[in-house]
Length: 391
Image (tube, rainbow, N blue to C red; front, side, top):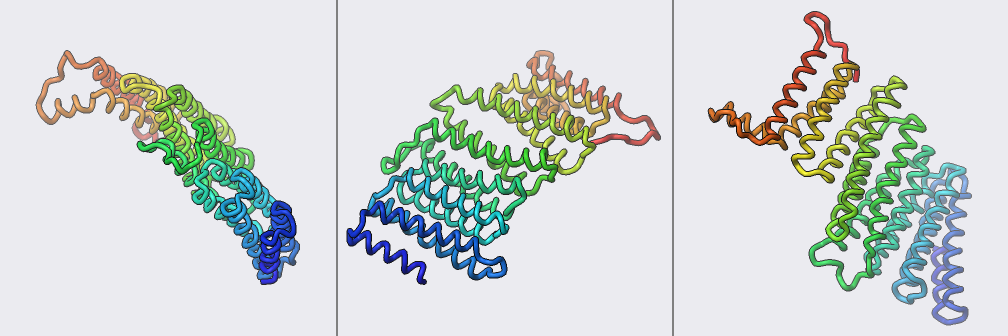
């Protein structure tokens, strides 16, 4: 109560004009940070004291920024965003020595909630979107060092929603509402790619450099970041066509990298656990997405046919069951695009004859299916020999 009383005293001084408003605002901001520092200095066993001091700090700073930005127009949205990022980083840094989860959680939560509220209230989306991305990046950096893993989902959810909201404002059929500050397409694209980069980098550090296993959060958030980042960027491609091939190429590079990590890096380590299957699954999904972005149906069917033969052949040669399963998936999708499934169904169920004039894609699909069948038969174990497949 005394801490909040001090904040109200500063507010009264500002309204009375005793000192310049900006000077009083600076003192108020430092006053809020001081309570955060006191919270971090409290003994570890005094959890209630730490909680109350941290809450006091947030309850001083959040209304201060709200009024300075919205009521008095003392600072811009950009200035408020910088202060919020600095406040959150200070909370994470000062809580590091004693590994104080309370200080880290409350300062991060205060930064996220205040930035989200100002994002909606100011109608200036972009600065606070980058605030939320910066906080998410800071939390992921801590997670890479195994600190405060429980906060990751909260920062990720808010960052996801902010980028989704900004993307919807720009790409919805009615366009950006007049009350909102302009959102440059280049800046929005940067926000989408930043979201994706944050979680890709975090996963690479934790799973490859530190050797930790994928968590459910990391698997789901990586998929969401890719959908929001790449999917949102594709919606921008209606006006900027050059974005599409770049995104398709990026997806293919990421897919090839995931395959290399699975079958080269993790294979050499003798690891066939969760990381192996997660990376290989991301590999096939990214390759499929990249092909669909870049190629038409017929071209994609041809590429998937080649990949089917290559995966099934390599899986049989080196006894990799995962590659053979992926080859089967590529084959099924290639046959679906070629029309061979429809033709075969008509031949088997409706009594239609196989037409000699059928589209070339159908014949190529049938040929690829036959080739994959021969490769699978050749790699099958002899009777009584037993299966000896590795992942």
